[in-house]
Structure formats: structure tokens, C-alpha cells
Amino acid sequence: MGNKSLGVIGGMGPLATSVFFERVIDRTVASVDQEHIDMVILNHATLPDRTSVILNNQEDTFLEAVKKDLKLLEVADVANIAIPCNTSHFFYEKMQEMTEINIINMVDETCKKIHQKYGDHSKVAILATNGTVSSGIYKRGCKNYNMQLHTPSEVSQEQVMNTIYKIKSDLDVDANVIEQIIKDLISKEKCCCVILACTELSCMKLSDEVTKFCIDAMDVLVEKSIEYSGGQVKAIK
View (cartoon, rainbow, N blue to C red):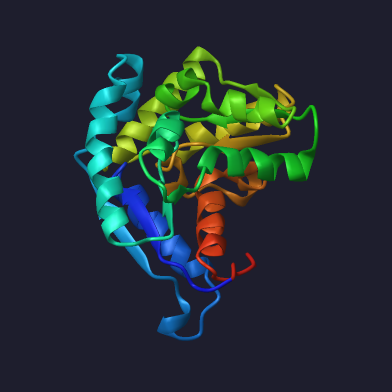
């Protein structure tokens, strides 16, 4: 496969976009600049809040705003598009209808990877925004691969949301809160793994003890972005 440029619709949030960019660089096998993949990154930070739009049935507000990004990336002649935001994949089908450029499906690729590792009938937990959870995108994704999605309790979900928006606001967060939720999902709820399905959670430093139970959707998107662009993914040491 020859090298192909990657378009990125970012800004949801800006820190997560920065982490995505850094991980693409870190995970690409390259000994010189020219072996890295070409990327066009649109840091569209003023895109409407995805959770708010979904919960208030204001889809068109988001779609009208993102349409401009898709047009810009068409002009830039990118081969594939990555969107490092799980919640925005609620609009995946409609966004894909708006452009002939392939949009990498972060949700489907993540569910596919989990199924390859754990197989049919796996019970999979999710940590995500209220918008992602209520949208059902990961529930449908797991169902497509004959797996069951488990969502956290109301109290745990509130803690997850508080953590996500603290990260967006550049406030200090207590990683122990998220780590305890993950431990409970594995030990008490008997889930085989936990999807980190919000790119803000990808910005957190979690202990090796809990990381081994996590499938980070951003990492999956990073790997697929490199592969689709003709690059070689570096193995994690």
C-alpha cells in the first residue's frame, strides 16, 4: 500500500487531538521524517458539544458545522479521515454520506478488535460520556459482533462525566476514581475488558494494573489511521 494522506477532524477536545497526533507519531515505524504519514489536522474546537446536541435532539447543528470540515479535507485531497471523538460517531453514517472520502469508523474498529481478542458472548464495559452511552453506538457495535455491552451504575457514570469535563477544563483529576470503577467492572461485574470510549480518558495516566483490562478506542483509531495511510504500526513494548 502506498502512502496516503490522513485528514483529522479534531478539537473535540483540543487536548485529545494533540494526544492523538503524538500517538500517531510515536506508533509509526519511521527512521526519517519522510517515513511518517502526511496529516491535515483541523482543530475545530468550536464544534457544538456532542453530548448536548445528542441529548437535546439538535443533530443538524453539529452536522452543519462539521460539513465545512469535510469540504476542506476534500480540497486537501486526503485519502482517509480520522475523528478522535467517540461521541461524534453517533453521526457517523450521516457524515459518511456527506463525503466520498472514507471516514475510519472508530467504534466498529474498536468492537472488532475486542471480538478478535475475547470472542463471542463477551461482556464488555464502557467508560464514556452520557452522550456516547445514551446514543447506543457501542451497544450496537458490540451486538454486531455478538457481544454484550455493560454500562456503569448511575453513580459511576456521574463520576466518569465529572472526570471528563474536568480534563476538558484543565482541572486536576483523581485517577483513583476511574481506576476503582474499572476494577469494580472487572471483578464485581465480571466484564472481560473496559472500553475507554472518550478521548479525554485517553489523556489520563492509569496504572499498569488497570490498563491491562482496558481497550482504548483512541489507540485503535491511531493504529488504523497509520495502516490506512500506508504506514507500519510500531509494536508496543
